[in-house]
Length: 186
Image 1: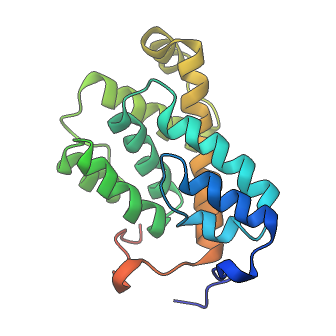
Image 2 (image 1 turned 120 degrees about the horizontal axis):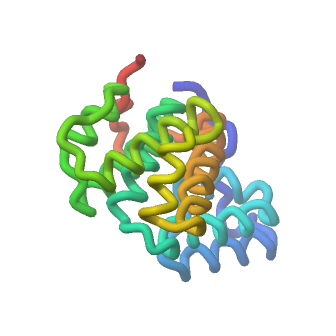
């Protein structure tokens, strides 16, 4: 692994704006600053806006957490973002996403045995990452299931986690406890 490009900023060296971001993140549902936010702290104005959007997308959409995590895993696989995968595969498991689904996504395969909602979210995310838009039939299914606001949340989740994958892939943070990369090269 190459050197970390955005090293952690010691608390005593943080600006007031950086301390404000840390307080906002640590005081919210994330509970602590880690992952992409360690890099984003180098631009506290951006970090504050990113964390606010992320808080809505992770915890405020009304889409079940297991479906959100499924979409995040599709996104992490798309960008081969090891850190994003490492963090969210664990969360996906704790939210009840079946291991065979997680393993298939890791291999770049369409999982067998998905329920209707899982298949819809998976196929929606794959299409959006591949084509920049879902095909009409998939869009119509998503609107019927999640409403237009929910479709916008699904699109925003794809874009948000793509942005975080790019931040993480550029920042190159080490995985906790020197864990080896979980995603195979495709």
